[in-house]
Length: 267
Image: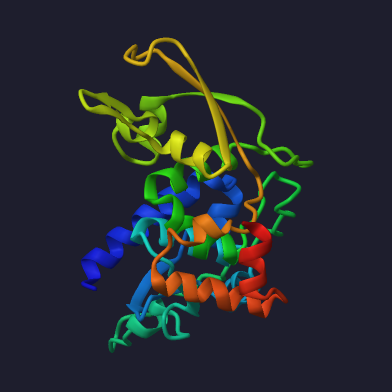
């Protein structure tokens, strides 16, 4: 993938991540990251120091970044964190001693602020299962809409569903980004084309009701989504690609399920 496209992908991911995290969390851990390379469905992300690499590798933000990049790419991807791409400080590498010219004094690196408990500030990390299987099942727009609504729930004590919240189609479309019709669907001469809200309702992870006329630009949609996504049903699994279906079978086996029995019991 060309470097320019990598930069564009990462900037889009950062824009989406900034909507879901507090300012302090984003600035501390993601503000100085950069996308280094992409190889075999794995993004290599450069971070500013070893503490950031250790903390992010432990899984606090890894699932969120993986999910966001998967949504942008439209397929499951993984992430790897490295310190500045090679473990060295770029400023130190570029400093060259010139005879007769005093080198500027090195500024001390400020200590990182203490990381808040993410659950205490209303952040609820996603699992790899959700990123790997639910994202491609829903598609980019519906997955992003679910992320936005779920991310707006900053309660410390969460229930199974997010509180109902009113959204306009143009507001949601700007955040995805997409056209409003991709959010709420559109009626055509030969019938109605479903939108992402319909898709979430179809698979049982979202519910909504409309307040106003469909064609009125001031119409609002009252939306609630599941906070935790359940295992896919057999019907949903059959909508995945062959590769993802095989991966889902392996996931079931690794977690103590017999795929064949699961399909029978869940049908």
